Length: 455
Image (tube, rainbow, N blue to C red):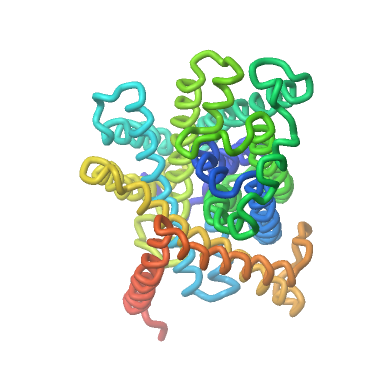
């Protein structure tokens, strides 16, 4: 029998936490979405990823300082509650939960689409359902099992990207193979310049770029189950930033040095194109398998994070009390059950409207993620004020540049949000946001009215 108030098991090692965050971040956005982004910005996409990476660096360092102050599974929702008030904690927890529910629906959709590349007669909803059931079962096991599964999921993606970078550099330096004659780093500025569409073209890709970084904050959700968190979490925070920048920026530089950016199709994965030109056997099938693995990895992370967030919300009285119980394996099984049940809506949408589901759910995910990143920065500002006032101890792992960096990154996130209006496919996020936050306000007021009154 599960008991309320039990502690999560601290069984995740540093290698698990590093790969969990990488697995949650590197997904179909890089392997497929980069094709459209290259078409829209040219080589300037590298600069867009660098700017986004700088913002992510400060967000993660702010989160890292909060995590070493108090490593808890609720992470940014708990810090929002403590340093910004219970309403902020309520909104942050539920927004992050819903963001990952929507992201998982998108990844399930991707699995259905790419399985049909091999088996076109299979309906799109069926692979999505099979993947959800398999990942749901693995998340109900001990957290160590989840960590191992996510480790190997993420490792497949990492090996693929490293193979591209290493083989690409060999071709560029030694001019071997079919691509050798034209491969050169000068391709980054020789075809219309580094900024072929100007600064404006580069800025219009920022929403695509920032969506590609969604999931890096998963380190915070693992805090309650990390071994020796005060050592592991700072190391993982610094390491994940460097690795993601290498994987994203490194891969894009190599791709556009091997093939002029204006020869890449916006509808074909640049990874497929380059691997085929490098004469890798069955390149399209290989990348298709990697994309399915990437989507499964992200969905796996979604089930993990949503279950823990519901548990943390219930612990603070912001969610139904049954979610505060843990299974005998110290897993928030009730939260995982509920999250998986909601994710079944994604399977249903793949049955009813397969052509529209991906755009809508990714837009919803973007709303929750931008709020989460912003609240991390605001919570950190208020934490630093509390340290100066002597109300809380100072953490040994500190974010550089505060408070100016906090305000600069917040302004950057607001600017990227405003740019969503320029793209009809992303504009739906601006329609969803006021509805979602209105519903959360109603939910918060309802939860307060049900809370027992103090006498």
